[in-house]
Image 1: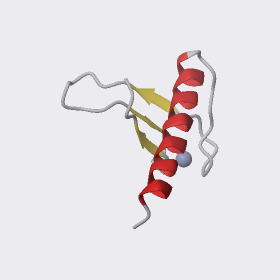
Image 2: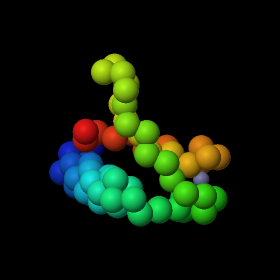
Image 3: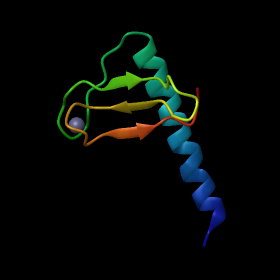
Length: 67
Ligand SMILES: [Zn+2]
């Protein structure tokens, strides 16, 4: 397994999440790439839960690694 490649992918998805989160929390509407429905930001209420971004249909579900 190529770990450097894996780390690069993780870093890329982390940056993508960060930008997505920034836009959503700024009140911008981001649409799902699959169904074009607006994505919703759900921040974790429970400590055991992670915040996530998802669309109505569920084709996009991004677990947030950042608070
Ligand atoms: Zn969708």
